[in-house]
Length: 329
Image (tube, rainbow, N blue to C red; front, side, top):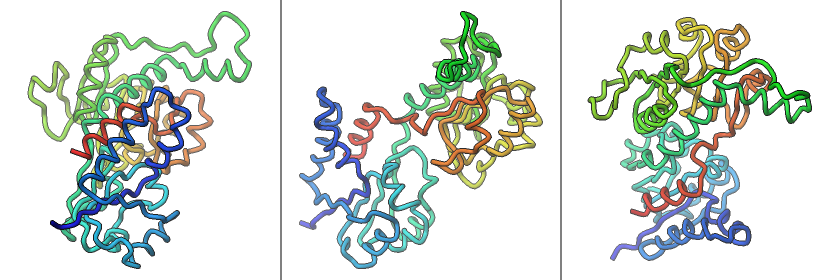
């Protein structure tokens, strides 16, 4: 029988250890237990590297020879290794056959370099659909209603009367929600937006069948820009979609449009967004992802009409549990 090895480039196991005394309901135990079940079929190895340079050195020293699977590229591991670009792919053990990516997209992995080496790459897209769509709904409501202004008024001590601070927000009922990228998250978001009385239009590379569209209207890209009261970005980041929303696209939108991004920071030109906000073309925005995470454009941080989240759209106990179970299978 061939000995099998599984390597985790992640700090999730140690994170779970630190939660043992603070989570009496055992939520994180089930995730850790699922991970440990893999030891029945593989040797679990955790690199000791604290940064990219050390990890590359560890690979080149051949200490990791024999490893066939890399599993669980969580945000914490991304901070250690950086992106899985061609340089890093070439340094990985020659025995490596699989990378099980802990996320919905492939933008942090050079898939072409993996393919050239015969390495298969998998991801966990459907697992995050609900959580991401929930986050988009939160940001849509927060941006439409101007809730961030109210939160700041309380925290800054400027709320002095029973009347909420200006400007008044807008109801979601009757508004047109434009979804750019009607995949799993987009379809999930459409169903949730129905509850709030929003009309959904969408643009995709391919038109969905009636069952999957569920009443959403397919439109061209330019129509999506022109008709949306709220534009939600739900598409993957790649060479074709990078900065797909920029100055030219903002010029085609309604004055007072609301922008929401829970996809990837790279699909939205932040400089163009800041300018559109300053000029009043964009009324407000809700963002969970950014171009240079964890650094956020100062023009977004300082604007009270922008609701900002620290890329936490998929960060729930349940999502982590489902991700581990899916990768184990």
